[in-house]
Image 1 (tube, rainbow, N blue to C red):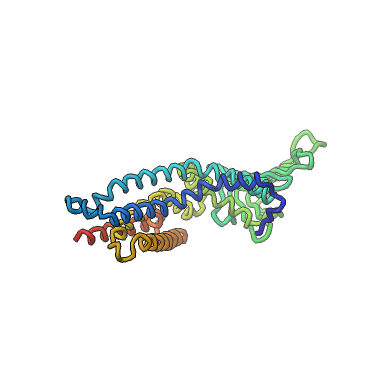
Image 2: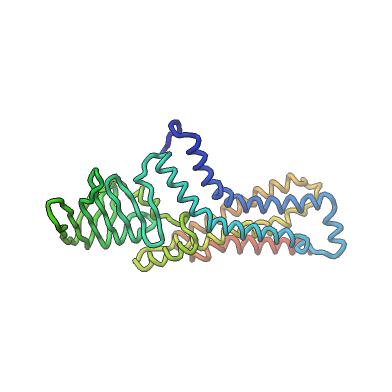
Length: 326
């Protein structure tokens, strides 16, 4: 959906992108680690410093060890920022987007480890669990209010099928009506009940895809809740493992970049190595995206989907370093 920014103040846009900035930095850290490694070793190679170190008996991996130590430190910091800071800023970013940019506050959902809260015009509801596709929910409690926000009706349902359009099918629930003419609310039970909601299933998919708004510990609890409810958790599990796996992408990409940094300077020099860096980034991203996709569709175990790219790239890097030594 296209959003017009003509009526949005500069302050709102600055706050939105400020909250989005750490997420972008996290995604660029692996590229920065690889580029820094390649440029550092390439400059040493151009100034014949590597030749001197090789002459003293030092191996390529020994020379690169201090660089890899710093890269490992950066990867750990990247993980901590991505796990502790980014989820909180993502919630704030989404709040600004729906309330101040898109001006549809009803579509902003607050996700916790045990419940999803959602506001829809004069209704508020919470859901215990929601599948990734946003088409099936469990543990629904729905509150309807009048224009003065006095409670009129409350619905509960153990299961909900969110159909195409705005039709919801509630199963095994109850309806409680609050009336000013009666001192006691009136409650009736039902096996199946269809209601019309203002949100479509496509809107609720944003609530189903909660990984970017949860820390790894919170995501683990969220996965456990969904498993207890009998919902599919493969994509959540892939996201859980990829939170760590992607954080160390900079380390394995830097290891792979080491042997390409010591090519003879007359073969193209530093600019050629920068081009190699760009090629390695695209190659890793294709491998990583393919692995995550296979994991999301159940063709790879979640742990393997998140870590196979790193294992393959790291092993290839060490192999090429060994060839350089021979």
